[in-house]
Image (cartoon, helix red, strand yellow):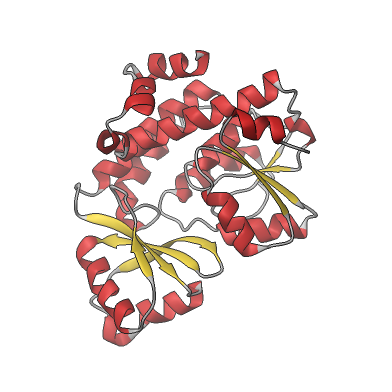
Amino acid sequence: KKIFKQADDKLNYPISKLILEGPEDKLLLTKNTQPAILTVRYSIFKVLNDEFGFDFRSFKYFAGHSLGEYSALVCSEALNFEDAIYLLHERGKAMQEAVPLGEGSMLAVLGMTTDDIKDLLGNTTNKEITCEIENDNSDGQIVISGQIKDLDKLIIILKEKSIKNIKLPVSAPFHCSLMSKATQVMTVELNKLNFLKSEIKLISNVTAEEIINIDELKNLLIKQIENRVRWRESVINMINNNVDHFIEIGPGKALSGLVKRINKEVKISTINNQNDIESLEI
């Protein structure tokens, strides 16, 4: 309750009411979605840490997918919660305004690799389609960003090849060059803040590797806006560095599913509610 109030006060509007009551269409606007998800994730994390003795300092890495990278920064104490929620509201607003509502979207393509997609998009017969890979999520799940008119053309081609695809319920085309205006805004906003040196190693979406220098963090968060989220590589790199247990802090179970697709041998725990917390074994 304290964290939800902090979020309301910092944003100067009742994001808590929107989270708990909707309406869903307003919550799905990325300027609201991004701070809302951070608020829920951080609330769960704080309950884990403060009420259930969850010692996050014993963990090897923190990582997050796209806006989840900000959750990882807050939970690892590399960034203040109030600064992060303000940043995500500005990030969401900038991303929303970078492309007019209804002009851009994202498409999940199943059963293909990044190389397959690159070949398809680079094919001379498809030069009229301007789309970009925005998420390398797992083997067989790639997400593409672009203008809706281009994605619709791509859907036709994928259908002809019997390749399954799903249009995502998002309000903007993230992690691609269409976000250049958002990059300009976030460069200014990120440079206003000072990040703290975390005791936990952080994994970057942009490089899929450990962030060695905290001073590089701002540049990586700026690059993240237009660059592909390299989640599959991030997970593989963590596993190669002896990580055998992943804990996803909600809402949702999307990342748990992706980790399972990447490696079926590792242990995965998903924390969405109190029952999940009480049954967690570390």
